[in-house]
Image: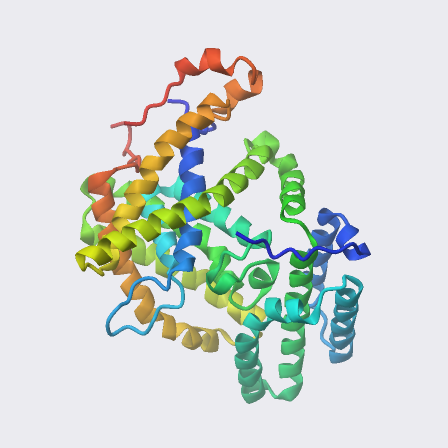
Length: 220
Length: 192
């Protein structure tokens, strides 16, 4: 599993993830109120300068932004038909600025830094029962389990092929049931590490083993 | 039964694993359906299955986690796409609607869990897995793309046959999984 992060040592990379994300949100809001082509054109130029400053190779930038092009073409074409060239250009520029800037944040910020920023942003929600540190944990767990599930999926597929079955439910149901079974063992492993229900893990991580037998798990 | 704020470890495991399933579904050009032109993404199938198999809270959380993975820049959407650019883009509304859709599918499934059958499964999945996604994704497309709502709607009609097929597949799978490994906790009406 590769991240889209493109490593380099530049001021853009060095900017804290939280700052970059805040700027993105601010610009994302601003472009919808910017109604003049020169302003949007200048913004696009500024984003291009940032790409240069971040030393993102053109090839990487292209690969990241190319998927949006078919939609962009479609939308601009529709706009030309219904609202004329001026509006079409505005809308096209707006989408381009947003997507390019968002991709720049993705390309220059490590996944772990983004997770940390998200955790920090969630901290004020703690009184509501949100536990930010869990976000980091589950994100790491999911990334770790993607190859495992992929392997399971390939296995199930191979088994169906061997029997000459190609129905999609015949693929999905075994995959789902296998994964759900996997969750049983994984849940126990988490309990053993004191990640389970909040009360206990907050009290003490060291005494987890002693307390863990009293887990009131009602699942069958 | 103080489930409200407590999160059981098994639930965390289910949420993480299901988010991984969602990613893996994106790897497969899945499902060679006859008649229907290749569906763009098998991942809406994951949205429906998450709600149908895990219920509202866990299903919604699993898909929300998937969206977090997209947002933090992992290439987990079909074709190795990912990052904030996708979410800010024209089709971003559909991605943002995924967790809501999974939650709604789960909620409806919980409500009819005792009498759950294929017909009810089809209904739950069609409402949560298709209608909810359109209700959020299409206006988003209209706003970001500066299109009138009607145009955005007609532009999305191409997805309809594929989505209908996915509703059927998800419902068949949901009914089968319920028989093999029931996990949803039914919503009781007034202290049953």
